[in-house]
Image (cartoon, rainbow, N blue to C red; front, side, top):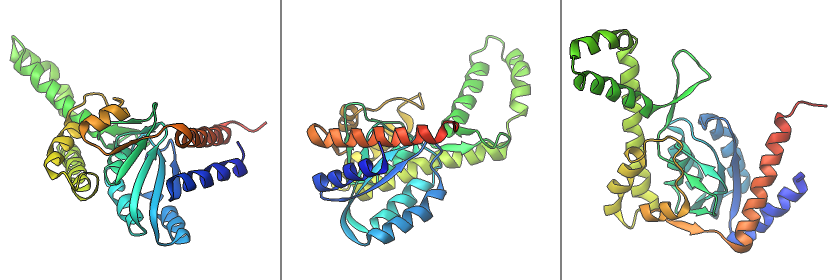
Length: 257
């Protein structure tokens, strides 16, 4: 699919949704580097009634989603996120700042388990809950051992590698994830059902053990999120756009002939 075809599908989607459409399609962790180009695009669009964000992301930094939501909402009255395939982790948090999320049969959200950069391996991003599960495992290994002293001696080399400052930083990231999720749900996605906010926050931040757990549109609705199930022409256009951007990214990654 060439640029002209993608533009055609974007125009059709805007007509179907009566909105202005933005696209964030990336395999890199979501971080603050999105903010300046996003602001430039929003200034070009200007103030408008409704903005849809096509979102394809596996997550990223804990602080970025609320910044994206706040920035987009400076330029519109209504904000929706369209998820063709995946919006995981921090990208799922971004969804909570929308008025609705548009999902198809293969669309997935995920648990809100933000990523932080590994202190030594700078290109490695680690789910913050991994630290919590590590500490929980070490504690259980000692408490449930028939010989705790032996268990402690075996685990001491591991314990000595745990930097208390790093543990504290990870704990702050966990608390920030919960705080941001609750704030976004309260202000936007669930503003008319505030009694559900603590339940949904707890489910998304603590209820899943796999970072990659797939939350499809039916489960998202059961959680209480405002989900528009895309079908017919609407879904066909969304899916064609996903395939077009996927093709574009794959071509950019392929070595030149």
